[in-house]
Length: 224
Image 1 (tube, rainbow, N blue to C red):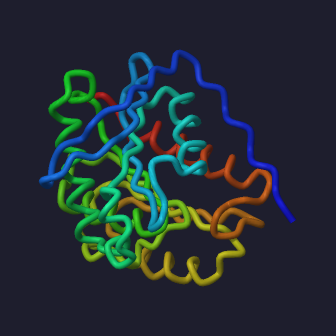
Image 2: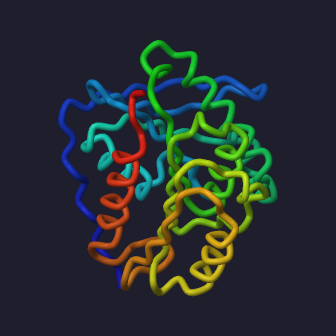
């Protein structure tokens, strides 16, 4: 039985532009959204088999921009790399690309003064956490949606406040998130969304994810 997708949250004064992110010996496409006077920017690390066009990540990104935060949705792999199944699960490669994108942001006139956060889904959550561990205080917050933080190699080195969001019906992933949660040493919360499966397709569940993420990033990302 098909489910209706959630309507997109309204966004005021939204300004988006297609950008090319260079680093790690590749050039990757991304969509940069810059609301006026944004205090911070959230980079999205999508999961295996997904892309910057992910409808769920785009929904959350619109909600974050509606809350006044800038967003960057990007492809972490080239088209050729994405055709190789094993490469989609190469957490080390995904982490390097995310770090390269973060450094690219730090060089752009419109983004270099913004606090940086990561939003990771599935395997992208592991890359987000490992990148946060590598970059230390440069990363202000991390949110994982239905993620696999257990695949991260540096959980105990993460300093950024971390929010793990899992659906209550996604029992295997709940167990994996609890394992990762126990290893995290930073400020942390594990939120379980009632009635949600792995993709948060059930009515109202993705809205809860977006609201939780917006509150977390708004709290932790500042211009200071």
